[in-house]
Image (cartoon, rainbow, N blue to C red; front, side, top):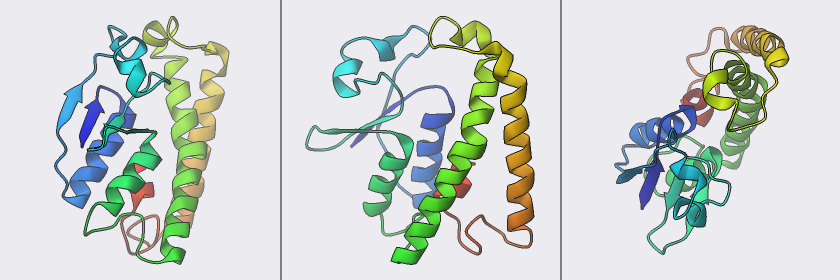
Length: 166
């Protein structure tokens, strides 16, 4: 396996997840600032032009952090997804909630405000939405904090992908 890596939060999540599992991944850095991820040969690996991307030993590629992390979890003797169907469902539920309700609005709030000089020519940006998106993330963090009060991790007593993502 080889992880196509770069700057930014998404590759960081996969690196942290692998480290928590005790997996060492060979890495190849893709230069986002020069748009190496938006040109060949990278696009033949991940047509979405996004990082991270995991190359499997058979030459196939997996993109998207949740899919990569679930694959890595199955390659390890440890688990951050869950050992039972119930634990896996709980992890997937909380990972989706954290991603959609906190990470996504927080990331776009940054991209549309402080990160605007970097992102304005790369993606569609909506600067007028930045403050609202940051407020959504802040509100959802307060909500999550209330729900996990008294617990060490988001899924109770076990660390999971949801914790790593957050």
